Image (cartoon, rainbow, N blue to C red; front, side):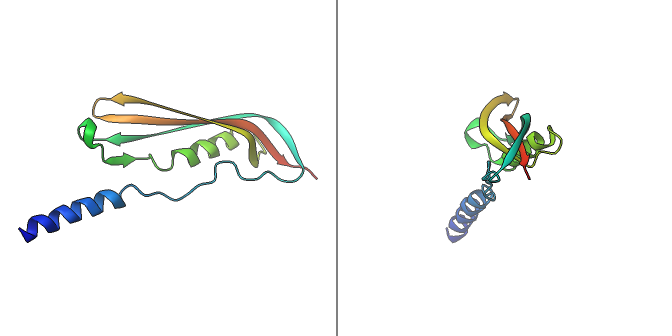
Length: 114
């Protein structure tokens, strides 16, 4: 009976630990003076699954998708160092045994003005 309780506790602990990610500020404060360079857009996706729908437990690229979308948006406008007027859109779809979750970030790309 002790072994069953120990296994259950380890299973719960591993599930809770697997769902952690580092915090990320999506739109940091812009510089005091900045120049708008144009519209920027970036998209990144991740998946969650490999089990039945009620027990999705395996994140693949899921926790970093917002940061990757932000970096892609910055890269879409040469010279951009930050975004202002940020908009975030999340969408998802089922793909066989996983759900694909995508984040699209749009905004005005800016750089610090002298």
